[in-house]
Image 1 (spheres, rainbow, N blue to C red):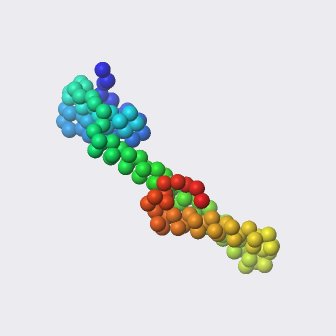
Image 2: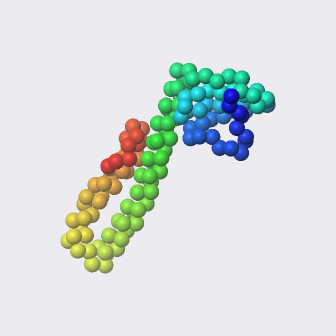
Image 3: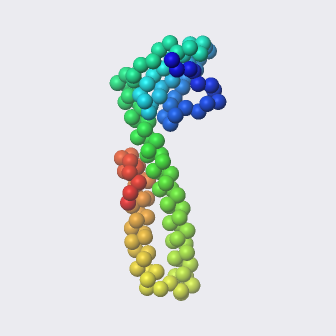
Length: 129
């Protein structure tokens, strides 16, 4: 029989809890298991309902999109720094043909990321490009 987790014990990834007085409910998305505790004792444990399963899937997708958006944001900051360095070389007259040639594919990759950030949704499901 499972024990109610303490308030300072973090759950597994994607685990949600709701506490109300002496009742605690737990939705464990990795195992797709719902648990209800009363006064610390487990009184119900069952597989997710179809609605709970859909909720967990949606949450997983949104968490993936958020992580990919954050990673793309980090790439944007790096790209801005690289573009500033390139423009400094151009301004100083020290940019070489190799610098100019390298900048075209770099800008194309950067625009792919910007488009994905602007459009969002399913384009954030994967980090590539």
